[in-house]
Length: 104
Image (cartoon, rainbow, N blue to C red; front, side, top):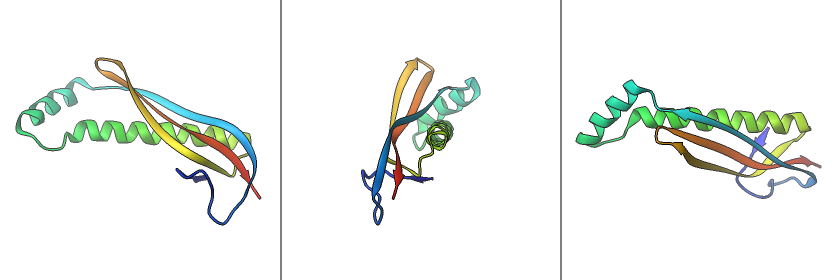
C-alpha cells in the first residue's frame, strides 16, 4: 500500500477516491517510564521513553488506517496526516488519516 503525504501519486492517475480512512490509538504513560523520564527531564536530553511510546503509537495508528484502506480495496492513501491530542494528563491519542484512492 502506497502511503503518501502528497495529494497525488507521481507517475499515476487517481481513478476513484474511496474517501477518508483513519486509524487511531490511545496510549498512557507507564509509571516506571514516567519516573525515568522525569529524572531525564532534570538533566536534559531526549526523553527516550516518551519517544518510543509515541513512535509505537504512530505505527499502530498508521497500520489501522492501512487496514481500513485495504478493506475498501484501495491502491494508495494520499494526503496522509498525523494528529496528536491529550485525552487525560497521562494519556494521548495519536490519529493518522488520509484519502483512500484507486489508481489507473
